[in-house]
Amino acid sequence: MLIETKAMGSVEIVEKQIIHVAQGFYGFEDYSGFALIDAPQKPFILIQCIEKKDLAFLAIDPFLFRTDYEIDIEDSVLSSLGIDSAADVVVLALVTVPTDGGPVTANLQGPLVINRKNNEAFQAILTDPRWRTKHDIVAESAARKASQC
Image (cartoon, rainbow, N blue to C red; front, side):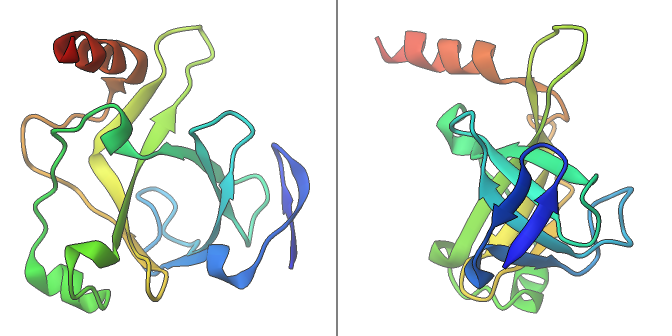
């Protein structure tokens, strides 16, 4: 299937790249179909809206820079996505790249939770005070590496 993106032009995707975010993303509740596309800048992922080419989010696996990251979500919510075990879950953090050259940040308070078996997804809102909407990816990656030495 060929989809149009603002950032990458026409991109060929396969069915397994499509996720369904039934309630949409916060602020974008009218859109539910998205494709996960590897961004040219690794390790980022483009979450491209299928219905609107101008709507896309950049995301990253939060465990790449925060090995202590954990999410606590009600079992009933996970069950509604058909999630039976932690092995079924993919977690992505939405990324902000400021135009003023400020730090690239990840939203660890509102992760995207995906059931890898059926591609159903939702954006969670976490109440744990450790997780904020702006975590500096580079600074936290450097801190993690420094603590491992």
